[in-house]
Image (cartoon, rainbow, N blue to C red):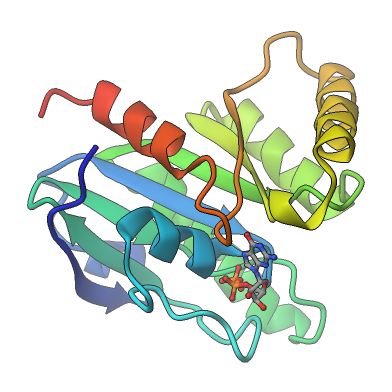
Length: 197
Ligand code: GDP
């Protein structure tokens, strides 16, 4: 997919405040610092559409971007930042889960995980919740350029083995590098083919 336009629409603190759900929507989520903003910017061919996080965990807003005038890209707040209080964490879990469960036009959720790490409890729990809740999602490995290609493959296999402990069928997996712009086209192709633009 060629990105002709990508514009910020609004930030919402509640799912009810999000733009009217009149066009297909694709959301991105992951732990703070996973590389979400960088990947969004790489996909959109934009330097600073999504703000890369100086202060992880700070942005607890849902950010909508209108792409090519016909779909929404949604940047969800990063989860799992240890240094926020329990009550803030709860609010913010509520914000995310309410959005995911209620957003009628959400076609797919991209769950980002850092390919360098072994499967983390918080990500596995979130993925588990998505599966159990029937949320359509894919897993996106980030920062692939930081490892040798064979280690990337090993880590992805390890992740798959971990998921297979619970699930027979796995979601789509993407391996990406915002730095090298790898995997962006694959994600955009998926978005293109899951819609009738
Ligand atoms: P966010 O908190 O998930 O939005 O993460 P950011 O996009 O702000 O990235 C966190 C840090 O990881 C920043 O220092 C980025 O420069 C770095 N980073 C993000 N993506 C990549 C990548 O694909 N390759 C490399 N080498 N670094 C990355």
